[in-house]
Length: 100
View 1 (cartoon, rainbow, N blue to C red):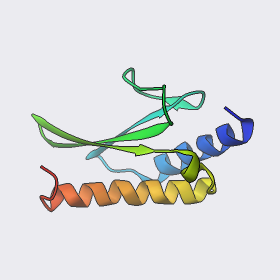
View 2 (spheres, rainbow, N blue to C red):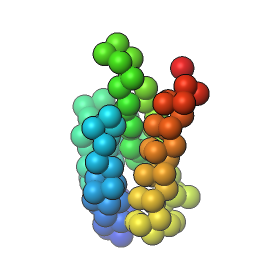
View 3 (cartoon, one colour):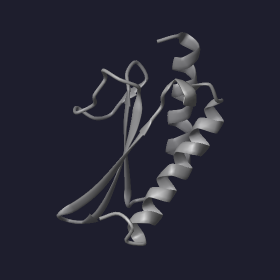
View 4 (tube, rainbow, N blue to C red):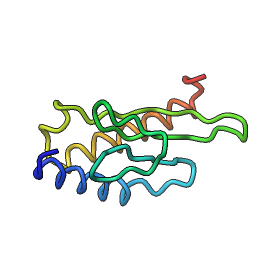
């Protein structure tokens, strides 16, 4: 991974962690060389952020937010803003019953 990309992704992780203080949401990072918080990360493709929302003790919904080449053209702040927006949208969809 290029140094510039690594620095950008480190900043994204920091910004997302600061913005997403929600006890209902669990965030796992699968970004090799930057932050890998899950043993089940698929590191063969694009780096991604896995969002988990526990609906009940027996039901957990997940969404994978990929950080591909197109996303990485943006600044760390833009990537973090898009990521937090996606997480909030995911949570809203679950709470509205749109995701089964």
